[in-house]
Image (cartoon, rainbow, N blue to C red; front, side):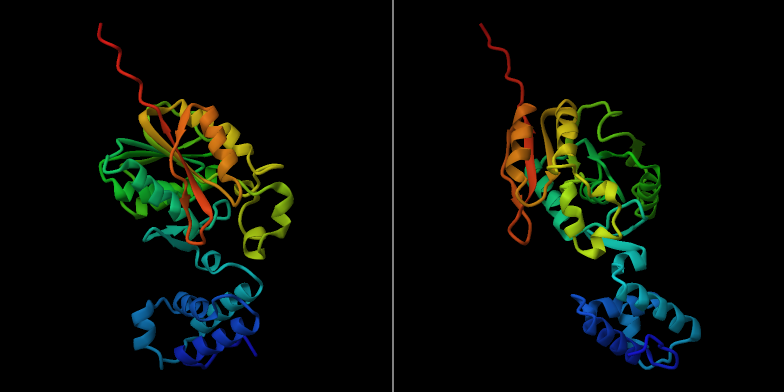
Length: 295
């Protein structure tokens, strides 16, 4: 079937694209087609329904054809759209940032649970990328001052732009450094989604990830734990009394990461599972110093 959509109505183009994506054995052909048609026409879901019988204009048909070829070649829809929703926030992407994934929302859920009604005054996100975690937390705690770090300046530009678009720039600041190397505490809450894929396993990842996400944000070294060995001691030293550190981990990594937290003096808290039942967010808490004994 052709990727030429000239002369088709919006609804007919959506059906044709759905069929193309289904024939290519892509996972969500109906959703992908709707998003790509909306991208090509500039219409949201309601607009697509209202204008379903309108014929695509030449520019719209050309944009949709380009998007269709990119998707059929394995490029993720979010890369084609240039943005992805995370925690209800629309985030712009760049080649140096990961596509935020639903699994990472587990870290936000764990943060809300770990703070148990407390309002953190200062929050840090180590290796912020697009700013997804930091901006989600900033949206939950309007009084918190937040800082995200990243070693890549282009990623930081993307995160800053997302903060501006979401009207969070006054409270969300960004600094270039390796995890927490340039930060000064104390922080009530520190989060991170570091690289954690073992180097040898990157070749086995889905093409959408392997070929389109930045390797620097994926590669966790030989055992996938290299980043944790750096960031956990750094973060532990910056936590306030009863401060919380939460990190995303891959399958099978929760126990070794919890041991690294224990080695850094943090008390283990319940690990949070993602929607697939995989331990995804490891939580450690700084032990509050004991009050001096009164003689």
